[in-house]
Length: 296
Length: 296
Image 1 (cartoon, rainbow over the protein chains, first blue to last red):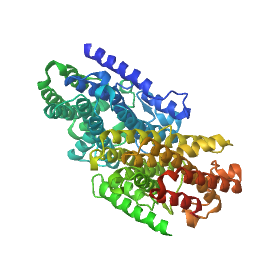
Image 2: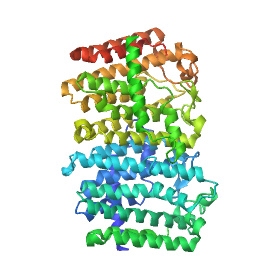
Image 3: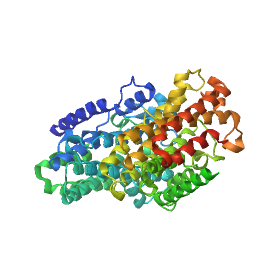
Image 4: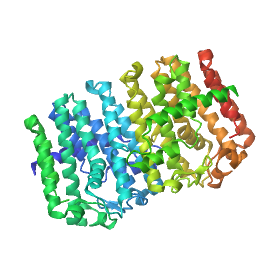
């Protein structure tokens, strides 16, 4: 419970920052700013921003200093959800219990809102330069890392393989590819960016990258399990919506019990990677426990 | 003719660089890289890259040094065309005489190919840092400028107003807003980026920005005129396709003759802004003449 309160506290700070960074709904053209804000403030847990901030703190940095980068990750995550939900992709009408962006604003505006959030993420990152002594070279490094994680060798690549694999039997290698890219790449970039912007050395960066990769797998396997075992009230989307589209999932491929075991193993490995950081990594430790034990 | 040969030469260099920077079609996932390459190599004139390079040369820089930035602008331009052509937006089946991206690869892949090109543009820009002595601070400045030009206060903002204005009477102010944002913002960013990356001083940057803004208007008015006066063979899209959708155009609002006069006036202002640069700005001078005199 203490951890959940801490996560909510960080989410509140991230929400306040997002509210400052995003143009108000009254800015011309109003409809695009309303569409962007609709999905950004649709009730996300702000996991990626919290991870970026926690990685910063694990190497002695501060939340305030890296906040624009934390928000940039949330913009990218939200853009990817808006586009994934489109009729030509997953065709989802609900997300977190609310109508999806295109159901409210129409397809054209949903596509453009996604484009705008992605574009704005790099504007926010560029704005980090010179802020509280962050070196332009570190900002450029983070932009290179995040753009790679969001592109065809990361997030987009995972979504592409996910789409072309629908209604097909897929093997374990393909399933891991989809998850590593579609979910893992952005977690990894979040953790690494927080560390780089806070002056992490090579050893620290390596350990935290290791954490991020195991965390990502634990997260996605648990997500798959919840989609089978959860209910709509808790996840905000119809039970078995992935199965409906014949999407590849861990329970579908390995069975539910083995999927639980794999999630647990990944969580352990993630915790192991945090050992060098001691108490400064407490939030990251609790986060991985929370993620595998959540029921929604 | 000499100018056209020069433009073709630069376009050839840009094409070669784009071919190096883009992942090969054989890269996993193959379909997304095929979709990206399909639209990138669909026969663009490479105006934005040529402008970026010409601005670099006007202040004593070189094409080689700024080539990744030149290509980044072409990626953003191409992403915007792919998304604009989608059924939920302009619903165009042809672009430059070839089937549009979604007609070949389907809507989902066209959306993702656009997303990927936009994302990759920032990866290319980040890669400029340290290249031939380019300072990270200048790279960050260019990323800030380009992301602002591509976002809701630029390219996307223009497209949003264009869409919501369809089938409506619009006034001169709205028409200029659409053009300034939808076409002008990226020209402006191209010119400014070439200059900043090549060490332009404030005075030079101001003059070149001035050039870019007038050039953008001349370009768009001419584009509108060609849409009325041209024919499908020359433009690669059905004559009057904008009028068909009731899109705002200069000839529709001012009449054909006055539209010609406005294009000529903007071209003159653009040329005037180049006076301080002498012969080093010859390409930019010829470019604006070419743009208002072209017949396709």
